Image (cartoon, rainbow, N blue to C red):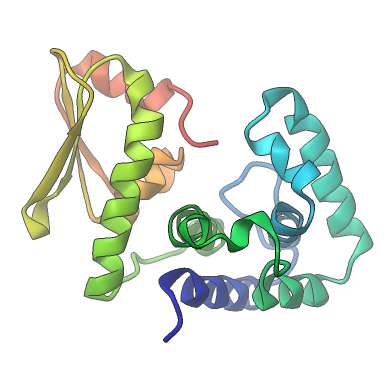
Amino acid sequence: MPTHSALERSNLADAMLSAGPDSPTLCTGWTVSVMAAHLVTREWRPDVAAGNVIPPLSGWMDRETHRYARGHDFEKTVAKFRSGPPLLGWSNLPKIDANLNLAEFLVHHEDVRRGSGDWEPRELPDDLNRRVWATAVGAGRFFLRRAGFPVTLEWASAGKSRTIGKGEGGVVMRGEPLELLLFTYGRRGAADVELDGPEAGQERLHSMKLGL
């Protein structure tokens, strides 16, 4: 039985081929071709991937990603991504694949789907929705701690909520798990979420750095 991340990898590959190499994405300056290059270099070039977590290397990562996109056939790049990472690659580790890869593929799938501005929310299977909820909470613990006040993620249709941080002036972020994940990863303008709470807190969530 394929894992959630394996299924989402295949779905993302299909979405990139369907959109075409020159289509826009939600990532500023990235076409789908550059997105495909990013996904391959992330798994096959750990030196490039380091730019995701080491800010001084981010500019070099972006240049190398664009260089890869220019120098490689788009369909072959997508096929390489679809085939998976190297056997001993860092992203093949089970916990990395189940959590970080799944979040990466879900978010970038929506980057491709929503890049043109013409999209409808995806309806995810129940088991995947539960996994995405756990992933959104995990991402929230990492990214939303910077807010300086408590943020409550609320999956209203399932009656679930989780508060991250302590103190006063908390904000509630309400939506389906995938939408919460997208907001937490910085796709605020494209995420279908509702914020409730002090106006200053809402403004902080809309302006602070989120995602990698």
